[in-house]
Length: 112
Length: 111
Image 1: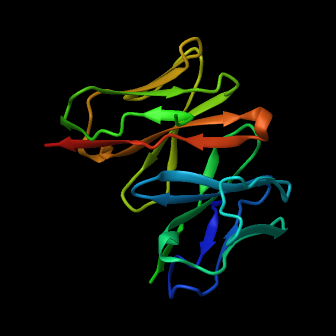
Image 2: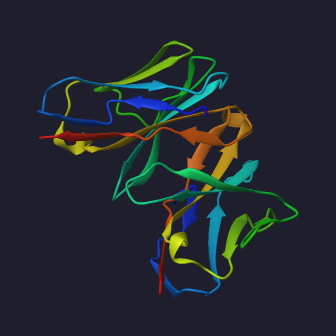
Image 3: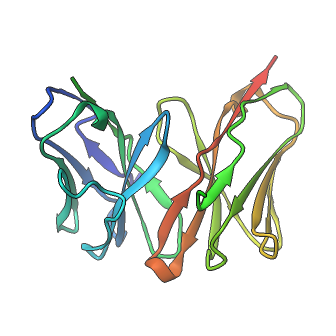
């Protein structure tokens, strides 16, 4: 049963620390999305990739967030330095250009 | 104005009721449409695609009106297990397959 895998599932960190979240998309999917979800904002698109190339990262705070796909089986989202307002659930999703996306279980991040 | 807008609810309905959700989108270039379901503290999951001709899956019916730029979801004979948040989604092919989510409509089905 193919699925998107995200690690870690939960992360508690202190303000100012670096946080790295990882995502393994479904094999064969060429589009990868990173979303952030909070109670107030709902699902916000942070960045997405097609064939490992970034297509749009305009939803991401550039000064502290970065997203990469070092290879087709790994996408990373990094926050440095982290702040309490970054506390949220971060979802990775993968799909193909014209079809629906499949979500991972998310990383629940708490910055204290 | 958000690109995809939904009534956040909550919709509180009794079991067996029929409930309808609407969603409007602002970008006429939007090309594919979906409804997702999200249970509390879980990831969103695809409920159904939405086609111009309308489509049905059991108790669920989805409709698309391109002229008015809205999408609807109808749930008949609602069950307790239908309680969740329903998210409207559009894809923009001309933006590389960008998926845009509405903020979701919360449904609570009561016994």
